[in-house]
Length: 403
Ligand SMILES: Cc1cc2nc3c(=O)[nH]c(=O)nc-3n(C[C@H](O)[C@H](O)[C@H](O)COP(=O)(O)OP(=O)(O)OC[C@H]3O[C@@H](n4cnc5c(N)ncnc54)[C@H](O)[C@@H]3O)c2cc1C
Image (cartoon, rainbow, N blue to C red; front, side, top):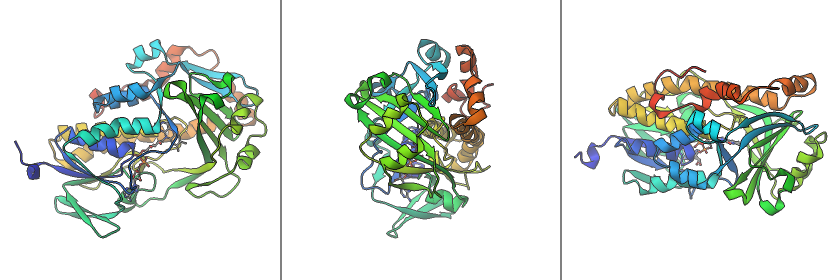
């Protein structure tokens, strides 16, 4: 048995979904993990998240699939509606046929619940140490070790470092130094109780209402006792990445041409915080020796394919597999990890931008959008989604499946 000091060690910066999942994946491969989080308490914002079949495959590989499933709502379908005339544009059934095809369901879950499902396992794991109220400033590579420095001047030493510190990652800044790309798209999010959700919109599906330069989304949470609402629009202002107070008046001003059915959603939230979103251009390297990045720090993306957290979960599992295959050689493991993850996540980043264009189509583009999937069979939808939802841990380091 190796003594604790003989164990390979890693520092993970960031206790979001990606950082927690990475800590767990590595600890399960025998690595001692120190997780540093800037917030005083670990948690997530009050909003929902969609989990594709690929996310459940990753959660299973982390040993927390059952905990996450118990807190998920499994939806019947994915629905795309035209927000101007309230007609259906596309539907993908995600019941039995979907599960048979991809081996996993499509679910929705409160962010606090998915975060908790991973946190419970992290807290129980003897090889993971947690430090909150620790704001990381940067790192120094020192031979085969790396030293991480926080804003108080404290130093933490390990064999390797993983930056899972989100869109504004300090680790990425030092490693790559590229700018974020502020999209100019603004998001408002809210969770409302079922009593406050119009009955005709209590649908067991993520429903996207696609409007000109805007869209609305709703889906159930927590056994249908709550609903997640998200509205997005192209801002008229010059936006800076971040969160600030907004107003109902601002939201209403962007949704004037929208049909009364989805429009009624805009009167339901009681809190009006606005997020100006950002992503980054994909780059061809994420690592420098024994330092790498993961999750939004590696591939921040817009939310239009509902895949940012799903990709962070896949990253974490792939990283664990790479460490296993490289037998604890972190430089080799990070090389394998980024070789597998960069093309896949870049495809998602670019697909997501395209999906945003489709959601927000106006004029003739809208007319084309509304005919794109007319008459398409479910099997054809599944074929088109195979590359995304067909991800499995068994082939996570290898060549992607056709699709
Ligand atoms: C409106 C919206 C809807 C979305 N919907 C979905 C969806 O349906 N499905 C989906 O899969 N994804 C969705 N996403 C994307 C998803 O939220 C993110 O991709 C995911 O949360 C990223 O997780 P992460 O752990 O990489 O980063 P984060 O969640 O940003 O976590 C980073 C952590 O690092 C900490 N940190 C930051 N800097 C430092 C520092 N210097 N020192 C120490 N700690 C630090 C932060 O406090 C935080 O805890 C959505 C995003 C948005 C904006």
